[in-house]
Image (cartoon, rainbow, N blue to C red; front, top):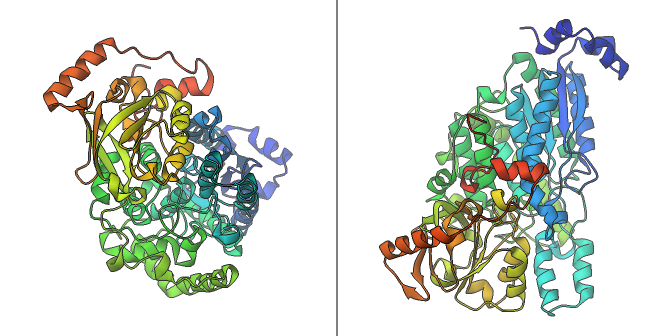
Length: 584
């Protein structure tokens, strides 16, 4: 089989001299050509270290007889943008990263690719871009940062900040937390969106087995990158790309792992968007179906006790899969050229779990604790929970669905009827929560924060202000058409679809409406008006009348990236990817 790079050399006589001009040798031109795309940049700790992995990948490519070319499309940091209008660009940046990878990989065709990222939008953006590139490819994940003193991790900053705003701690304590929460590079050390999507890459079969969420400071991570470079050349020579083996069963495996780890709710945006690029349609209902009855096993923050580095010490993705093995599609093919089941057997034989135990022993000594593997990843029969970790709620308030991470929600809020307190911006709502202008028994709404309104930012500070409040954290709910950080905890319901900007029922909620939440029955509905219960038929008529006087808000962004995103973003429960009509 002739490689595509060699065909292109014949078609474009300028290609050889141009590549020779940037340092390629005559021999390099004849080799399998591999694009090495990363989100490396000085933007944040999740990307600042990735060039080390790039170099390790290049070494592996070279030793396997290929030639690698570095390409870069760095990502932004949600943590740095949090609480400002900068966070509005976050979800849109996923699409732009995928766009640039598509451009890089196809403008000058390559025979294969290695894609390297760590964080919230870099991970799904690269996984979407891999699909669009349609070349043999493999994903390398950038690992997780270490915990700070007293096992401090970044998601606790929201709690510290809210306590400071309420006068519960001194500024000195807040500054200590700021200075110690990020002691190394890597993704934030909890099962937020970055960690979740690293795990999803391996669960889909797109990364080498056992490579997801390694400590970013580990030499093992460089070894995985080196091996990924070698594997990319092998895939290129064989002509095997992810589209040849990724199936619905691959995505179902990933969702079952998501349930077992209590993964970020943002995964309900990203996995459907990635699947869509492969012509596979999944949505919130797919997640809800697979989470029902699934065993939740991982005792790692934000829902659990331990920092994310402990996930790998307990055996990582392979250990999770070993526990839920009967539920998985073990015949799903992977980037190794072997099935998932074959990969798991090979890890057992290779001493993988013994190496993880060595890391755990060292961590116990470092932090002065005594933690066993089963304290981190529970055995299947001793699960933390047995109904997955998320639920998709539906009703006249969210006909297309809304998502709650029930593993991070107080049990008191699983079934409630609350009084609606709608706000049309996060800033207004946050002020009301911090200064107790909302009461026990309120359902607090933040609307016009969906993808068509403002880019679908995270409501992180408001969710943290609620969950860290001893009274409100167990007595009110936060409902939004925006989304939440993977670090968010508490009684929070997001992705409410259709969104307010599209005229969804969330736009029609009025002060004093009665809101029913029932997690077990998967209900989110308006059941009363002005504090009085109504029949479903009465509520339907009331909403029809309200819709007659509702007016769409003026477009917030009139140009640029967010104008494009707001015009073409799909509904949150579909994945908020860019969709274009057949006539456009």
